[in-house]
Length: 96
Image (cartoon, rainbow, N blue to C red; front, side):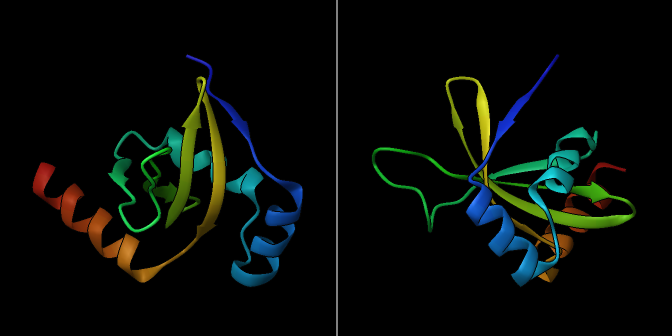
């Protein structure tokens, strides 16, 4: 299954400056077989649902904010945030 990704290059550059993560790197979170997809209720609207994907990239847990539009994942933000790591580790430990 091929997943298509897209993003705004200006947001990508800003994300790299702020969080040290490129959206190119962020794509790899979706390859983690233990990834978690969660609703982003704080940023969703009546017109568009937003989500978080939590998963490991190069040994660390990354959180990626995204929307899905017509079969394409549009990355909005990404970083290595403690809250995401705790949620991922709690979920992964309950599965094993």
